[in-house]
Length: 371
Image (cartoon, rainbow, N blue to C red):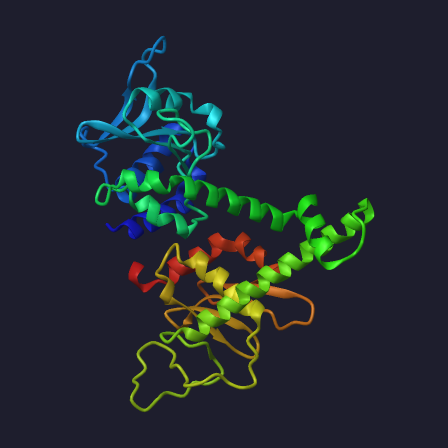
């Protein structure tokens, strides 16, 4: 199994099983051991590679264990401490990692709850584990920019020196991204003051700051939305494998022979107006469905009455419908096995995520490869 396939496989497993995991031991068996084996590529049943309940007595602390130690050439390289998947990750709860980091050759420590994996090293002081992770992997919200660094820790391409040399940059870039995300969500007084001074001569009074905080919030959201929509339109426009087509026309090109699939017309119908919201909604549904099938199999098809998201560009395999043409209300439509459609009110595009499991259920039901 490849590195990318291992990650995708574990993402799917977490989404399906997370709610049923009740204990730390179940978390380790269901998610942490598969991460070690399928993602990092180590044999969890080979004690020369993975040692569970690893013990290294330290001072007055005797018999304390770290959940896993990953070995290379007889030396500890990576220490892993696990928590229940429902628990938050607090560095104060990783005392064993701190102690073992200083008495083994390990340069990498991982604190995880099976979904989120925090990676630590010793940037601040040699042989003393940092309190801040240099890399954070959330399997349900993957930052793809960190995957090359993660792949360097796999058995096949293990490169500790390379990871350590880039760890500081990774740590600061990740921290800056979190700060930027926080600023976009809730602009700080410092940011509001700075931006207000650049566009206005107003004084930094409480009333002015309060007014501009709302303006900064609106401006950042609009800017991000415009950038996302522009990229989505570019991506869809560049796609050669699956054009954005209408279901209003059923003409078949002479050289084509339809086989249980709707034909693809050569061009969109002029009367149909595909909006930025429909494109953004399609991308959200596609992202959700990708936990079940390859991304290229989730395709768009617009019509006069609704925007369809299909499996394999087949109109008989509708994953969902976006009813965004109304003047005031918008709906997400999901069809059952009898093709009966249930419409769910959508006040914001993020509301689509509330129906993620229903969308995945439809994809699993429609996927002919599962039959």
